[in-house]
Length: 275
Length: 125
Image (tube, rainbow over all chains, first blue to last red; front, side, top):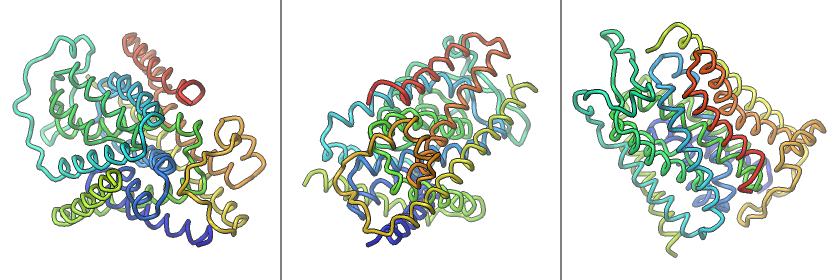
């Protein structure tokens, strides 16, 4: 295969990964890593390098649209970014000490969990409870737009959220992914943020977390321009198309099919790691 | 509570993010064309990790390569712009919180900014 053919094939694969990532809500990065390692036999260091830069692209692109709608909570996001960026730096350090097979297994498990989490319906986190001392001190309580006008909400569980965000950061730096599933878990379940607020704030944070990991990856030589070019452009284009389709069509069945495909990829990664 | 200033800040932030991504994609695409035209030889072996050469790993090296209009250098510059986009967003937030005299969050955003700058320029390599 010459360079042009390789670029075209990888670019098309990345486009598909970005599309699946957007439809399932998993994000393009988490789909593109197994694609590169399992289907193209790319070394995992190059794969996570290329994936992490594409994560920044999709997150920043989506956040550009979200921030103006007034859903994302900038204070919550900024405060938790301390945890995710420290976590990301720890994660990038772990890459140096863990064997490729172990990283592969951890990736598979995280991917399986994410696919499962994206399929289960999000129940609304009960009636909003009263104010919380830490959150009040940090002035995190805010409002968000609903069909009945602005509604105010209280933020809770700041320490638990902070801890889960640290874990999300470690996974992001270790695996080259956005860890959106863990971020939403932290804000949805632990901090009791309204669903739309937690998903948009999570998206808003993914870019910053990924930038912390990508800075280290770049200096370590994980980011290869010849590979990152088709991956970044492909995932970005794919996720833009995916977002369009998502806005128009009911995709429940499609999601189920795609999540199954992703689960197979995850099992393949675990199997390769165990071999 | 959200007020007029906050809304205005959000709008600027949205524009900043979009510009960063478009600019980055443009550089990556341009660099990609140069790279593909000049490198018709068999594909690099990605099965074995070798790491990138010095000039594609440091900020100064990348600028040097990009100014020489080398394909790989231009792609890396695009990726560097992409990495810089969220960093610029955090830097902008520092200013926004300063403007609101929200000292707690000035400190919070400065910590995040410091960690990001550290990741790109020092340590952990």
